[in-house]
Length: 141
Ligand code: SF4
Image 1: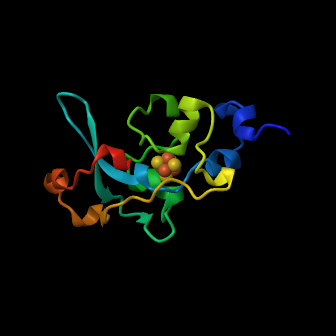
Image 2: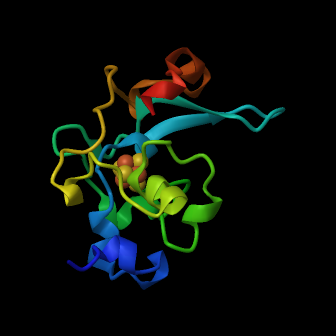
């Protein structure tokens, strides 16, 4: 039996549909993050980008996302290595770090990572100075 594409190819050789199929659509990377200026540590909050559709788990403005939200980063095979802050459960991060997808990945016939456990709130409903109140635990990510 031949190996699945993600074990046969380097990330840079994935087709665009193969690359997209790695995403769990879990929404973890769409959570608003805070960075400690002195330690550079990243903290995730349960505040989520206003364009994330909580029902479909898809971005409602996928094609325009980088112009609508300048800090929204397009994940690519070239930059995934440097994105140390990506959630630990992100399928791209796991694939990059281990060379395989986790057992719970849809491409392995499963349903993806555990859903985000806490109630989410859209970023247009939270003032920037209140974001610290919404920080969530690392193990949820
Ligand atoms: S955290 Fe990773 S797997 Fe989840 S939606 Fe973002 S890019 Fe996709």
